[in-house]
Image (cartoon, rainbow, N blue to C red; front, side, top):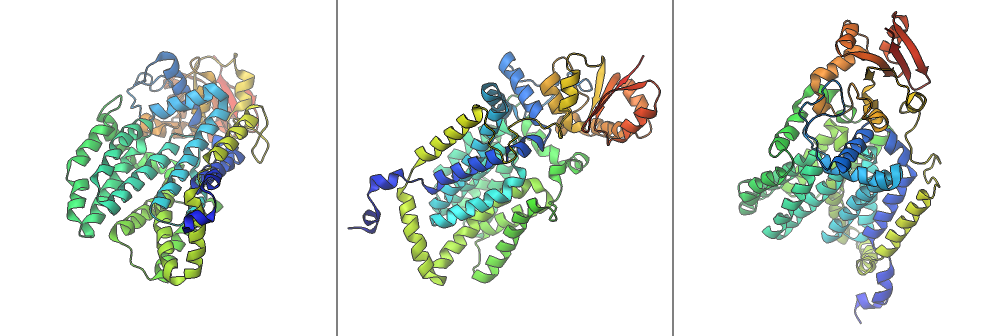
Length: 499
């Protein structure tokens, strides 16, 4: 009798949850536990939902600004329209609970896909489980209810497909990149990362002496087809140019928190630090020389992550499988007893499936939450927090807001649109790639009460202001004749200009 048959009856093993199924359940559940910070740590969600609702009602993809009085009618590149539509659909079905469920389904699916790919690389399942959970904890600092979560999935898929091509030399795998690129380009602007991955693999293969395989990535028809695939969107090739150009706008990048380098004094960056140190330590302990392609991937994405914290989750997605594979291979000679033990567990896992349990528990968690039971550790439920957004001000003033145009806090633009549009339009929101450097500087000039702020408000026709009490402009308005405070709490103050 074979070792596989002796472990347990196959029908019984089929009922056991496999490592990817277990990863999906664990990560989805952890996301529900910590959902409130995901909803409230970023101001973009309200804009995404509002844009999606507009598309659902109008059956149109907007290519001009509808939401601000400062840029009304200006041309806009809809680089996230499909994800905004999905967020709006989730919101229509289950409110903010639906948004959280969609977010966690995408994130859990991304890490489950990584687990499947690592098993396909021959890495034993216990190492897959531990490694993917560590990758998830490393990337959790950027788990937010925003379109960028879809990039986790597409980045993982691109990486695994290119790695399979590298291992097999089968060009058929590369064809899968084309439909993925079409979807990625319509769902999030970070699709340009896909081009970077292709280039890195091409360079790595060339440095490994596999010139024919490298040429297919760098000089063949694939790059052209990928550009054409990315151009299959509402504005065509303009989207590709727009997405490559934005990171070059230094002022906007520098004032955006997620583009800053990681703060290693913050616990949220400690898993990243551990992964970096682990990569260096493993390289020294194992005494193995990496092939050029995985080495380039590690070095490049480590550099990207050190430059900008938003790249930390992507670094983890490539670093964990590379390092886990090295550990798995070393165990065969360095710790054969452990390797045999892990091998037996891996044999069971590869015969298991058990997705019905994972999906069933996920459905149960969703039903409990839909019934009104909060599942987060704070027992708050999925809602916009009054400490993060001007919830009290909007609740009190809805229906009797001051007349005229508003000047609003940058990070509150999305929330204000979510509640007040189309009756009210914002001065600015967090979509800096659209509003640009000039308007962002204008916002900062006014909010910080720098010389000329009064003239700018007059020029824009602003009749009321909603800002946090900590903004210098609030103190100046209190001393400026003609401005009257109409609302105040710990989060927001609302001031109105009197005739």
